Image (spheres, one colour):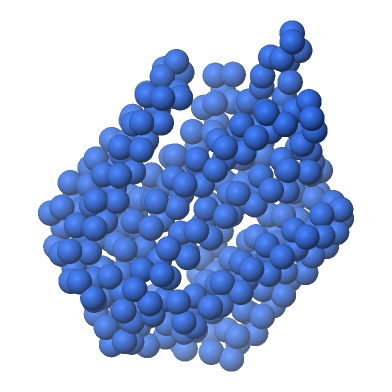
Amino acid sequence: MKLLQLIRFKNLLLIALVQLLIKYALFPSLSMNINGNELFVSTSLTHFEFLLLMLSTLCIAAGGYIINDIYDIEADAINKPDKQIIGKAITEEKGYNFYMAFTVVGVVLGFYLSNLVGESRFFGIFVIIAALLYIYATFLQRMLLVGNIVISMLVGLSLIIVGIFELLPAITLENSFLQTSMFEVLFDYAVFAFIITLIREIVKDIQDVDGDYKAQLKTLPIVIGKNRAAKTAFGLTILAILLLVYYLVSFLYMQQIVVIYFLITVIAPLIYIAIKLFTAEHKKEFQTISNLLKLVMLSGMLSMVVYLVIK
């Protein structure tokens, strides 16, 4: 049970769910009529190969959570003493062993998958992800905003990697426009995931400011203060709202059900979060905002099902 908590199994389930939604809801939802023929998005992975992609991603992510907790022992002792696992329920040495096991398994699965589908060059993606997670834990998280941006990019990459393996190898002259269009839609989802994650990372830094200060981290609230950091998160939330409204007006205005879904489950909660960020002062308030942002991420990704239903 402690190991499941250590690897943030709930977060891993969310990653798995999003990747499943991409393959089995988003990709089948887009088709195009060309010269009287209806073309559907072509994918290249079998169910087994897709399972390998998911397992590789999840194992590398689990390793990233573990190595981050190992290097956050001092800060976590202050920020969340009741939830600290490394150094209490699990020794630091065992933590390293678990980190190595998950990371090696994830990278090996990525190597096997890349060669299995005849795209050996894709293996580098798994190595880069694993390396960035280690560098983040040991170095980047101590740099102002750099660590937050890297983690947010990796969350977005967990979506993009599905498109890389599924869409790119299946491109032909006949379907290139459709495949590219789907990749652009997937990229838009990745941008959404990036922005929401970046906001949440800043909010979490505000929550953890006391422990991070003792650990000599240079997080945004430590450098510019909690109030200004909250206003920065507020500004990013407003940006997310404006981008979503622009996207709905420009591309989805004909799909009324999709527009209503986004207005109710994504934009309305983001407006509430923006208001709370502008007024929040206490740690519990920021914890609530962090939880709401996770729900917004989930509801945003679940919109892929809506596309499939209304098709």
